[in-house]
Amino acid sequence: MAAEQWFTSSYTRPDGDCVEVALPAGAVWVRDSNHRGEGHMNVTPSAWRAFVRAVSSGRVGVE
Image (cartoon, rainbow, N blue to C red; front, side):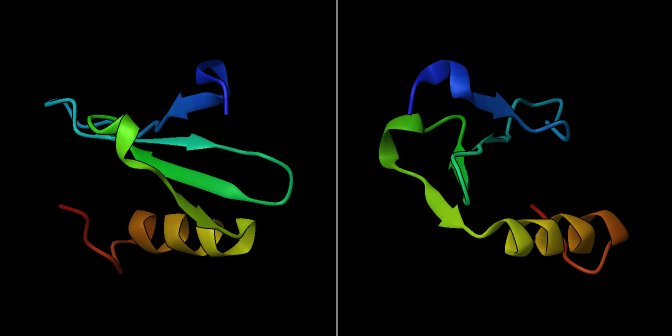
């Protein structure tokens, strides 16, 4: 996927640790912004929404 199709999470930490997300048709791709060449994780849109809700609510901690 082209670089311009990836975007940085709105929850980027001040130290620069963050994830990047791409939204190809019917999927959500997630990768580490500091290790872009090491691949990405592919999840369904509904799984991504559930994860974001869990993190936002504090039910899941992110380090």
